Amino acid sequence: MASFASDNTAPVHPKVMQALIDANSGNMPAYGNDPVTEKLQETVRMTFAAPQARTFPVFNGSACNGLALARMIRPYESILAHRQSHINNDECGLPEFFTGSKIVGLEGDHAKLTVASIGDLIETALGHAPHTSRPKVISLTQSTELGTVYSLQELQALSAFARTHGLYIHMDGARLANAVASLDCAPADVVAGVDILSFGGTKNGAMLAEAAIIFNPALAEDFAYIHKRAGQLPSKARYVSAQLQALLENDLWLDLGRHANAMAKALRDGLIDRPGVGLLHPVEANELFVSLPKATADRLFAKGHHFYNWPNEGPDAYRLVTSFATTEDDVNTFLNDC
Image (tube, rainbow, N blue to C red; front, side, top):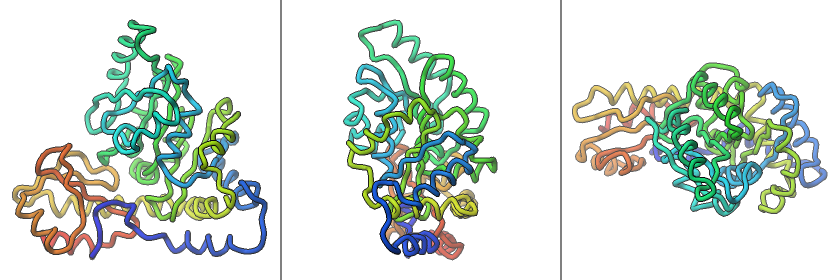
């Protein structure tokens, strides 16, 4: 039975697995000095039209976020993020552990921050200095934890605000492929104004591969020390880099993101007109948040379908997540069993 619990439940994409096999030949320099990682550096620069970008492969997304934030902030400063953000809710305090800093969770429709909400917080914080931590980083998740996507106009407004107020922008891109595919734009457009990107591979066909991509050259200095000290510098980095290289080559990552998004929309279209079903947020990437009658949810669970109740969105709320491995048959089976 297919799983709609998370895109983390999907297998490794065959091209990623083949890339690992291809990398597993002979001896290569360690700690990222290998030709596979060197090639990845250039591929990332071309993908994001960022000739000065530096890429640091890591094992998982939580560590990637923590490392990125640790380079951008001091303990008496704060990170502004949405209340629903992964760094605020789902990383067991790892960003605070890495940074010694406070995350300030803000409201915003559909898990998106706005200039207005951030501006009000900054004015209050600075007006109470030094008793309140000084805001320094805006962390944006793209696509968001509720399956929505920041538009390019929203990103531009947030970036301009950050520059005006001397703030850094961190982007949690665990599902960046889904966001870029949804916007149908160049990857460079989505990261314009971003200082450090946590680039996700694991939710999109990799085995275990993420990367901190630093676009702000001033922040690249000394990052290698943070990378190492956090235990995220792979000695055999070629195996992490090979996965990301395989995803970026020929835009495979975007093809996989488009497919996952299409399956989410097919699921939405099949559910939306059914009695008792409500759509809680726009479906703009590969996650759906819906309200289901308890009898319907119980029937689906009894038939072996895997998905999560999502009580933060209401007692009858559920999350459904599609992936590159989701098929039309998977969607149709789920809909037929509703």
